[in-house]
Amino acid sequence: MELQLVRVDYLQVGVTSQKTMKLLPASRRRATQKIVIGDHGGVVTCFGIKKGEAMPVFKTLPGQRITRLELGGALNTPQEKIFVATGSEVRGFTKRGKQFLSFETNLTENIKAMHISGADLFLCASYIYNHYCDCKDQHYYLSGDKINDILCLPVEKLSCIRPILACQDRVLRVLQGSDLLYEVEVSGPPTVLALNNGNGGDSGEELLFGTSDGKVGLIQVSSASPVHKWEVRNEKKRGGILCIDNFDILGDGVKELLVGRDDGMLEIYNFDSTNEPVLRYDHALSESITSIQGGCVGKDGYDEILASTYSGWVTGLTTEPVHREGGSGEELKISQEMQNKISSLRNELEHLQIKVLQEREKYQQSSRSSTALSAVPAFSVNDKFTLNKDDASYSLILEVQTAIDNVLVQSDVPIDLLDVDKNSAVVSFSGCDSEPNSNFLLATYRCQANTTRLELKIRSIEGQYGTLQAYVTPRIQPKTCQLCQYQIKPLSLHQRTHFIDHDRPMNTLMLKGHFSFAEIHSWVVFCLPEVPEKTPIGDSVTFYFQNTFLDTQLESTYSKGEGFFKSDNISTISILKDVLSKEATKRKINLNISYGVACS
Image (cartoon, rainbow, N blue to C red; front, side, top):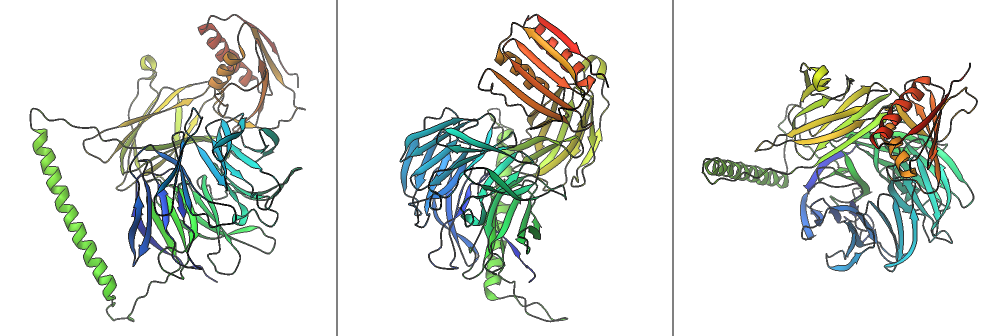
């Protein structure tokens, strides 16, 4: 059966974060569902679709940015209560828009991830996990690296509460109460979690995960040890995963896997005879897909895939066919309903064009006044600077809620700009005087009309470190620009890993001195990527790294007053020695340095 879907754009709200759009449960099977979405303006919007038009149900007042939106309710009942995380507060609304909960948590940071199961509320800040039951504190856990998402296995199928944290260091942390039960290593930094089939499968222990480098996998999280079921590699070099859902869009009784990526690719996978996912359908949107869900939205009886994007568009891919009458050589007949809709849209467009001209003229007149004030328009930049293991290059992704005019890239360290197939911007290079000003690169990317997302590829040289700056200018008036800065680290091509080959001959570097654990950790953060900024718990820590370009490895173990580094690349040891010596000298700390050179 061939899958044919038609795209429909329903509504645009403000800029949205990951997992902030949901479909409310339907009143009956295959009846249309209401959509609820939260944006960075703090507004929760609930609406339904009637005759192709968005009909509002309720809309809240603006407030702090909404970072998560989840549905909840009593166990084994329709989940139709709306919960939003905004700042360090959780608010609850009924499906009619009445607020029934305002819970100010004891978190000192903003909430980054949230999950709700019955009376249990699971919240995560950057490194902190909290479990509340009926708004009373139950459990707490401090993670070793940043938490990207949280999920709890279904309590209805298990005899215990089993929260799972998706952490930046390529680890899923399975908790029991306030304790770590065990860790599950995955192939990339996990960014999103979802229950397989929407309910965890037959056992309730099956967990889907998506990574920032574009992989999707399934793990069975049992109480004893995890079982890796399958993993879909990112062979087509597409974007990272931001959202996952399961829905039977084919109507064959088996739910398909829905995936939304940060490069705007929406993918639908079905399963072969061995229960391995196979890509069945994909569709390209022009911006990041922050949420995805399957349901019935536009018309009774017609299923569709609903997605929300970074700039706030709510878009559907519906199974409802587009009816066209007329054969070859005949004029196309349009229904009266469609004619009325086209006429209404034309009138609305003319009205908006007149209004824009009036406001522009009004602004020009006021700007000539001696008392004129010009407000700088605010805009949001969604950026991502990550190392690609496959080609040892950095991807810099810049996404703006409005069209980008140009991006100026400047670097005080030698770097190369590589070609990107998806990039249609025109690049021009300016001459740089690198000696007195340490200015090695100055390039301008001029974007085509309606470009809201720009992807650049950069390759650095290890041992040369500094700052890369991107000046983003959108197509808005008056002209304004936003500066984004990224650190090129001394060992910039190294990537965190969880194991190394201990049989290789290793060069060693040992440091001793009067420095604290926090001080040497800050030096390692300065030298190497993917190291958590927060000082680790305990008296010492060990990190493993792999060079993505040369495939060499590095082991770093350090504690208060002592640091020990091992690598099979002598250049890595030399760079570490130079940089760590400089950092210690800045703080007037004397170091006792000793080496060991491997004999092959």
